[in-house]
Amino acid sequence: MILSVIIPTHNRCSLLQAALNSLEMQTLPRSDFEVLVIDNGSTDNTKQVVESAQQRLGNVRYFYEPTPGLHVGRHLGLKKAKSDILVYADDDIEAFPTWLEAIAESFQDPEVVLVGGKNLPKWESDPPDWILKMWEPDKNGNRILGYLSILDLGDEEKEISPYYVFGCNFSVRKSVLLEAGGFHPDAFPQELIKYRGDGEGHVWQYISERAYKAFYHPKASVYHAVPFSRHTEEYFFRRVINQGISDSFSMIRRRHIVQVQEGNKNRWRLAFSRELIPVELKNRIRSLIMILLFSVTESRQVVKRKILFDLYWLKGFLYHRQQVRKDIELFSYVTKNNFLD
Image (cartoon, rainbow, N blue to C red; front, side, top):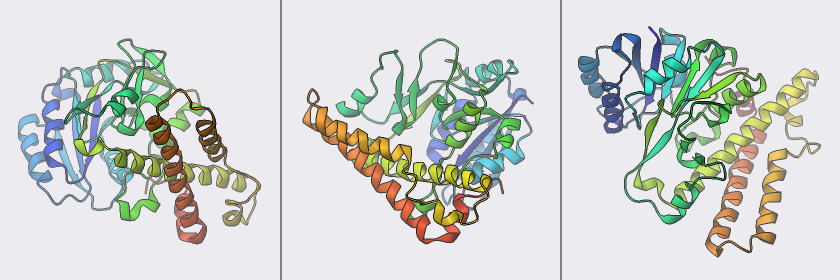
């Protein structure tokens, strides 16, 4: 067994079917990979879709886990996987035929611990011009639009920052993921959004801090569905709010670790001490001021959107800080050692 493909899913059986169909076309022999579908409490035809795929592929396993949270499904997949190479994919991707073969090839280098490729948009309909503008190449020729989890770093194999391996196409050595303490919480329903964390962001940081090798292979690529519902400013604003929540989660954990190392017992109150204004919060405020003062060459609509992004980020960030400040149990949850159990 070379690869374990792990697909958490929740009530998106039609998208899941397309993802599983794309695995039938892989150039890597089926004897060299397994597929684990983790059903996070679906009430649609997810199980029937998986059963159909089992008959066609023969290497698909199904697990039902009703507990909400993407990290729960990801960790169940980790525990059940037979391989040391874990290939995490979202249920709304369609893989290139060369996807798994290129991932297996990349991990032949023993120094590589994380592998990604292109995440190209599969637009449900033509997106508005302002989204296409955000998807244009940067000065290095790369296209990166994190709010839609799409990315294209070109057609050359290369070492990259781990921050460019997005969760919808995220292959990692099991040993390194365990070493990092697994994933952090992510993708909660809106009524449980205060429990959101920074997802795979924690793993990115862990790998980066230790200078482990992340690798980009253009053949290890997928198409990522972008439905019409994500073509709106409202969707982007919601993503920005959620990013503010994630960043608050990350900052509280970092501050908490420092306090524990210093042996400070009054850790809950000090997590919100005025002595440290988080760097990211200061950067966001500075960005907002710079936009207001110096964005004279951009259209009024672009400037307005940038301002609203920063304001919605602040809304999410401050909401999460307030929730944690008043709830010691939530603080204990945010500062757990790891979320594997």
